[in-house]
Image 1 (cartoon, rainbow, N blue to C red):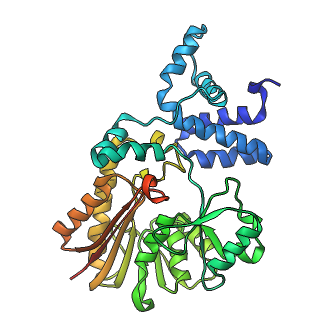
Image 2: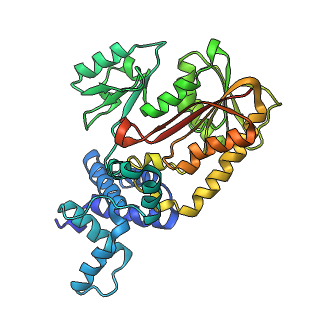
Image 3: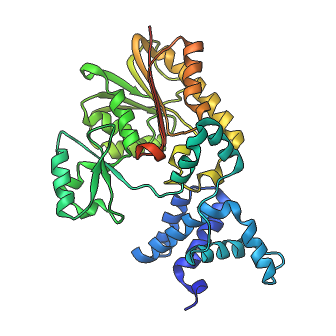
Length: 370
């Protein structure tokens, strides 16, 4: 059977076609078409690998177009170009991921000599990291289960709890059911942010941009009393499922205009909407959906949220600002703006990058309201 006739190959091209039409995240299209086509595990894996390989190298498709023209294809269609890109990848002829010039320029300006290593790290696939609920299991128990399943793992350098999986083919279903119930996949950087946000003496915390509830679940597992807010009711429904029967107050609300009285919370976590550029290892198609002009929109939104949340914070309270971005305008420049404009005092600041920290790219700043 020729490559073009294989089901996974055709499905990969169809995924890319739908992505072009909708700009929906590739992982969502992959999941939907895998179900519709009833692809088996092996076919789905091959299709997924091909699609994400395409997304990593499609920025430099001009060379492929030139090759097709030399073969007599004068005006190659998108599908012909995509097919050629995947074929080259399968033959090991394609280059590593390339990035848009604006993105490369920003990283070189921000990180100097470290930018090369950072760009290289963004080309590599990220492995999963496990979080666990210490109320129901321990790290020792989880690690023992991993060892019994012959799954390699490692500790993380900044925090004791995260368990970094080193085995390439890992599924939580490989572990005993009693362990599966109390673990979940959560990047070390994300766990660090939630850990830093834990309020003292189990006081209330507002998770102001809760999303699907990953950090909410972590905070609850460590004894925090959480109010989880998000502008999207759909995302909060996901958070409710993730958190199960935990005692948490869910609120549908806009973080730029929160439905709370002034000085309502002693601790506020802002996991701010951002470019997501720190997660490119897991979503290499992100830069196909993100433009340089969108960065400014994120910066303005982040400032609106910081300003609104500073009014909800009690005097003497703590505000934690976090992003999954590696761009300075969303991170330390925002921290500088918050100090100069909102009168917040910066007490801790950390930028994580894949090239140095064995995590996605995360930023966290902790402010004190005097």
